[in-house]
Structures are given as structure tokens and as C-alpha cells.
Picture (cartoon, rainbow, N blue to C red):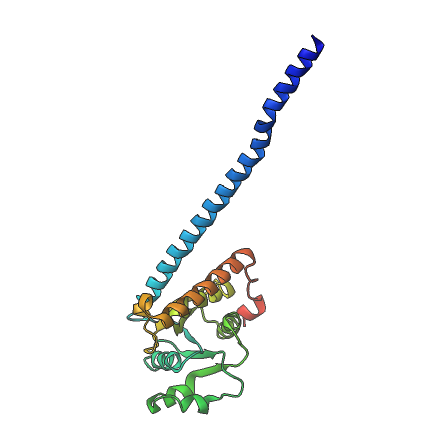
Length: 233
């Protein structure tokens, strides 16, 4: 009788063994499915976000009647500087900062790339910023310049594709300053047809990636506020 009972217990344990082995496998399968679903959701969100980003840039247009205390243009093409100087010539603001100028480049060199009708405004009311090396540097340089002039509003001039990241950095550096976006277009970039133009598509993909990294960095570790001594000068 004892042997029979033992055999029955062994049979019962053996019958339960596959079920016990299957439990970790089912858990692993559920975890794998969850990871795949999450990865798929992230991929869809990135694609949708990129499409919205690209459409927004392709349709970006400057405001009809912008006015502010100062203008800042982020270097990167003659169209940007030309557009900013024309705003200044139209009395849209009282002074202009060209941020991110090569230290070897002065006012005369910039004047050589522009129409002569802008020479007077370039000579009277423009400051050159030579310290910025990237968009973060542009934001710091602009913050210090605006604080020195006690400006509370700025027209921001840069390329349309560069504008979202520029505004993010500038707002983080000086949240108290009103920023008016003034995007300019490069005629050589066919952003309106970005889905069918490999150069425009590649540019937007790279800029979208940079913008996401910037947004993540600023969300995790925003920059400290500008020193009181600068804001009060």
C-alpha cells in the first residue's frame, strides 16, 4: 500500500512539472509581447511626431507685422542676416544681435555679402556676437545681450527648420523674454516637398532628432535662470 501511495504522489508531481515549467515561459512571452507593443507605440509616436514637425516647418511663415525691442539672428546663412537687417531697416526693433559670428569676421566682411542699401543700418545698430559655437551658445549669448539692453521682447530670425530648437533653447535661457519667431527660407532647400526630396527629408530627420534630444535635456535639466546682476544692468 505504501508503495502504491508513493507511486501516485510521484505521478502527481510529474503531472504538475510541465505546468510549473510553462509558467516562466508564459511570463517571458507576455513580457516580450509587452516590450514589442511598447516599441511599436514609440515608433508610431516618433513617426507621427516627425510628420507634424515636417509639416509645421514646411508651412512656417513669418508674422506680417512683427515688433519688438530687439532682434537676434542666429548665423548659418546670408538669407538669415539679410532678413534680420531688413527688419531693422523697417524699424521693427531698435537694435540687432548677430549671434555666432566667426571671431575672424567683422562688420566689413558681413557688409560685403549684403546689398549696399543695408550698409547704413549695419553700421549704426548691429552688434556681433563672437562667443557662440552652437545653438546653446546662441541662447547664452542672446540672453546676456538682451539683459544688458534690458530688452523684454525679441524677434528671433533663423531658418524655418532651425526655429523649433532655437526657440526651445532661447526660452530656456530667458523665460521672461517674449520671443517672436521670424523664420526665413533658403530657396535652395525644397522644404515644401520634403517627402519627395531626399536632401530636405534628410535635413528634417536630423533636425527632428536634435530637437527631441534638446527637449529631453531641457525637461530633465533646465538651465538655471540668468543672474540677477545681468537682468538688472
